Image (cartoon, rainbow, N blue to C red; front, side, top):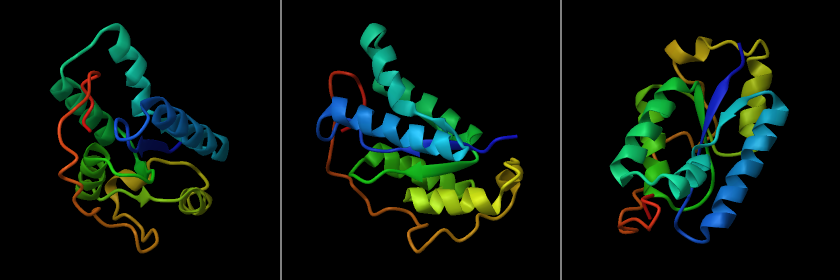
Amino acid sequence: MKIIVYVAGPYTLGDVAINVSNMIKICNSLWSMGFIPYCPLLTHFWHLITPHPYEDWIEYDKIWVEKCDCLFRMPGKSSGADGEVVQMLALNRPIFFTLEEAETFLQENENGSKETNNTEAPEIGSNNQAPESTSGEGGNDSTGKEL
């Protein structure tokens, strides 16, 4: 079975269109490596058609984080993405901050099994820790995603 990776990154801080585009490009790179990426910013398009309260999107994302085997944290400030990192750490699953770290993990787990779910997360560089708080970004925009 393939390894499912949740991609966490900024949404409303900066240009939303660029942030969505950047995440799709990261997801494409991860897919090309052999991961099955979950791209939460695709809900941007869903929200444009049928808006939902901010809290609903947060709960939706939390459910997907639980289902994924690991997490890729894109650069950039995002209290939502920081919360997803904290959640993944609590699940004791791997977190990557670069494509190189993700590729190394995939090579070390060539069979693509989901065995990473119930085992201790391997050391992934010195960045495999909870991010510094980015509180103070505050609020959310018209799409309901956190700033």
